[in-house]
Structures are given as structure tokens and as C-alpha cells.
Length: 203
Image (cartoon, rainbow, N blue to C red; front, side, top):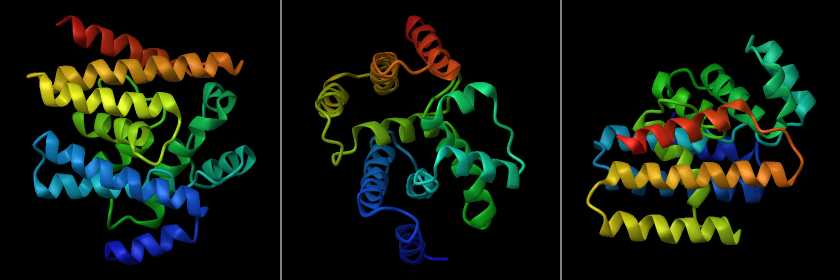
């Protein structure tokens, strides 16, 4: 399956706005892959992960739960209590089911963790997490501010990985504050990534 065919397939499963976001995340991911010295092959893998990251975003909570049951994907009580994270879980499972010849474990893991994050994320996973937040079609002031700050620091600081971790921590804390402001439960993995990034930045 070539990428043009995949994009057309994805377009039929998403709203136009979601599809444009998806393409923007994929372009952003490719820029980040190049910035962090990925090979062409790994850059293409990250691009593919970005194309697939929101494949089930349009589903309702009930549809996510039903799909998880069909694909034999376990959901925890914390997952079910946090509906916005469900598409990362079902999306990874559906990508594996629908596109087995395109995806590998690294791609699936990046899709799986792109919403909550987790401790001990790989650089590959971190870059999709970042790309999803700072891609330029996001118009929320906080997203635009994080984008500007990240690229400024990436250009002016010598340690790229430390720069990445600093901004991922800020993004994760933004997310946590936003969830609390909406009176929704914070998924434990959000707290996990915040703690893990703080520990990484101490070293």
C-alpha cells in the first residue's frame, strides 16, 4: 500500500478537520525526525505513525469500548474514566489489525502512548507526542506558544534531548492542568510521564 492510497483511506474515516490535523502532525513529525538525526527509514516510520495516530478518534466512548472488545484489547477502569485517551488504545490496535504489513512494534507503541505518554518513552514515541501537540493547525494559544518556545530552544540550546524533555514536561503539565480545570479525572499515565521527565531532567 502506498502512502497516497493510505491517506485516501484515512480521509474516509475522519472529518476534514481531523484529516488536516493528521497530515499536519505527520509533516511535523518528519521535521522533528530530521532535527533529531533519524535515518530516512525511521523518519518514514514516524511519519506513518503520525498518519495513523488518530485513526479511531471519531468513535464515541461506547464504540471504543466495543472495538476494544472485538480486538481483544484490555481497557482499565482508568482508561474508561478518561474517554479522550481511548483513541490511542483502540487506534494502535486497529492499525495493527487493518495495516499489518505497514506497522511494526515501534510504530504501534508511538500511537499507543501519544495521548497520555508514559514513563521511559523512546525518542520515537516522544516525538509523536510532541508533534501532536505543537503542529501548526492547532490554534489554541498555549499550543502556539509551546511551538514557538520549543523551536527557539532547539535552535539555541546545545542538548537537544534535554530541550525535548523540558518541553514535554511543560506540555504534560499543561495537559494535566487542562484536565483538572474541566473537572475530569487525570489518567495515572499523565502523572507517570510528569514524574519520569522530572527524574530524567535531574540527571
